[in-house]
Length: 221
Image 1: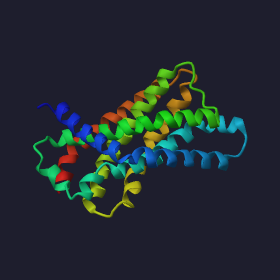
Image 2: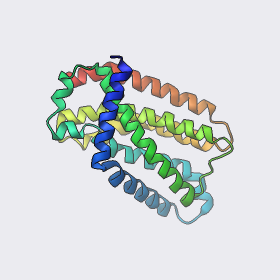
Image 3: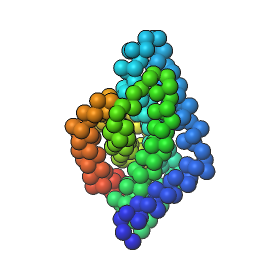
Image 4: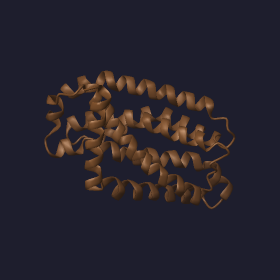
């Protein structure tokens, strides 16, 4: 069985669990919407300012909501005491990491579709003349966030009751993705997002490669 096939099995299992528990829809969407409203109120009623800040608000909502998603990536394994089962499973360690990251990324992309609609409605975000640039920025940024969160989610799950550590571990590494994603989203209106998309791609390659190399050692420890 190939690594991709194994990763698909892990991702499918995690997505089925999330669908059955409905945790993502029940918690992530209201949380993201509340953040957007709070950010909008803090900036005031000026439409020009809100429109200018819309890309940053979009990515802040995605970032903070994603931390909740990272905490649930290993929820079933921790609650059922099945974390050891991942160690004993006849799967490649890299495939488990890729599957976990893929499931988180899929959940975040669904969340982002709703968040974009909210940001457009509330803050007048301009999708721009090149919406494909915006889509690429969201996909690449989500892949990077999912890779970071899936790696450190394992650290927190193995530590038991260390949920408070997750934001402290994830947020510093997520800052480059947040900045590049915000710039790429803002530049999508003018069609000049190419350099920022390249930077996001480089971040993704680095984080995914690091996760595939380190995940096995963390899982066995």
